[in-house]
Image 1 (tube, helix red, strand yellow):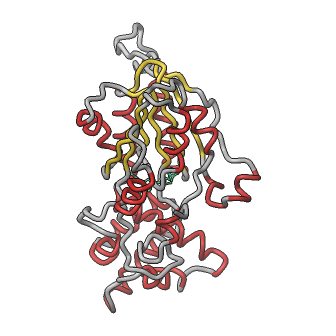
Image 2 (cartoon, rainbow, N blue to C red; image 1 turned 90 degrees about the horizontal axis):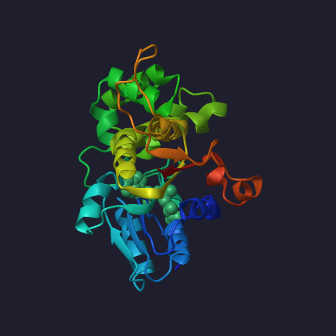
Image 3 (cartoon, rainbow, N blue to C red; image 1 turned 180 degrees about the vertical axis):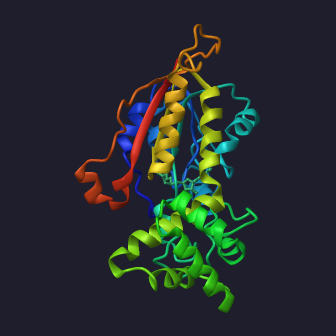
Length: 307
Ligand SMILES: C[S@@+](CC[C@H](N)C(=O)[O-])C[C@H]1O[C@@H](n2cnc3c(N)ncnc32)[C@H](O)[C@@H]1O
């Protein structure tokens, strides 16, 4: 079987996650099983790994890949449903919870999946194909203002208003159906040297919106912290600043022992810190890894331990 995705910061992820060889672990972004294989390799025969991916191709690939290993259970579900998966498995808490956010190289490179502006495909961008709205629905039916807000908020693209306007002008002439339809509309009004950056930002914005990625991540983090055993570890790999900020802030909040307004005479919040941060600064790939796997260049790893 060829491996369609190279796991990022592989050794570091396993090192931070590993706290008990007989433990129970959760990999919320199974993908093509790179990190899961590392967790299985670390565990001994009594360890349990629950892994999930919303993407049907990733799920089917990994189901086959791990068919002979009884220690792993695989789900085709969103990681924000970690609590439901735990209930199904009668698991109270985990020793380690892991997520490697975003999309896999397979999703980006596969011409049919429509995740990349580099390949022509139906403009879709849903990881979970049962979701109702895809990217074509967004660009063809949302108001100019809503489109501009999505592109600004989730793509951090400063020309969001201009881009939203040309999208709305173009769709009056002809429905926008493919990744190349959308790319052409954007590159026609963008200086050549900014093509790649601008396309990346707009596609990122649409992908985050269509998959509701930021809310899903917040929910996953909240539930995961609840579900960690004392001394259990949570390890998250993110690939852009919006995701990294959410992880950083969620971890920070869980270290606080008081959230009363500044200047309050006595503490009334009863806040109890639940996490200890292990990575004071995010861990990033070294030059060697970036050279071998260019997609690792924006990765940031944050890890914390349940108190
Ligand atoms: C970067 S890849 C993970 C690669 C994996 N660590 C490996 O080594 O093969 C991210 C994967 O997470 C999946 N994914 C993204 N968001 C998800 C979510 N909310 N719930 C479940 N899976 C998700 C994507 O479909 C994709 O397969």
